[in-house]
Length: 291
Image 1 (tube, rainbow, N blue to C red):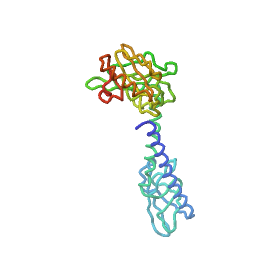
Image 2 (image 1 turned 120 degrees about the vertical axis):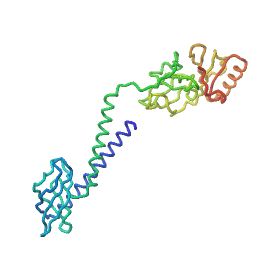
Image 3 (image 1 turned 90 degrees about the vertical axis):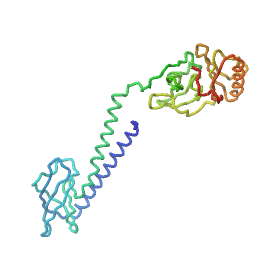
Image 4 (image 1 turned 90 degrees about the horizontal axis):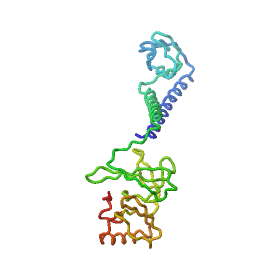
């Protein structure tokens, strides 16, 4: 359960407990409104720190026994002590005293529920206080790909990782240059090379677990291509953005209007034996990155 859900659960449980306690106090007020009082004696109280106690009293020449719930903050009367109770004349077993009211044991559910809610809030606050400066957990990966010269280096002010799973190999991390918008949202400021689902200019959400790139909230409309070694001539595609990854690897961000034509150019380039490429437009190898 995330911290937000723990907080909400704690608040909900405390609220429910408060409503339960208020209903018992309202029940006591209704009984006291009858203005009929008797002197009762505690008989069978398990102790001052217990929440229920048994009392005996005489009303209209009859002996009555009832169980009272402690709904106050003070200590309840001890065994053998006298306490003045208000009762309902038509239902003499319905009684209320100072911070006491008659009722079945199940009506005392509010206390464990309330304490559980308080424990949730305190535990969540304690955990946040001690771990507020911790780095997000990152699972171990095989290798890391860094962008040495992001396309929008002047806009980037942070980095985020994206996890690349490779068949029969350890996973990779690709470190993307980003512009942070808020605590959980960033704009990609480089052209991804291994992660084909992302593109330059995408607005993405950061996952809670590990701080990795998550879902795309606002796509830029660009299509990502990864090529090696070298890159074909793209002078006739003025909107294409080419980023040098190093070691003969290049990442290309193509606009929506030019993506299909660049895809065809790269396809011919690869068929000529000049290199190889990857893209989501390529259905045969789009899930096998150029490692």
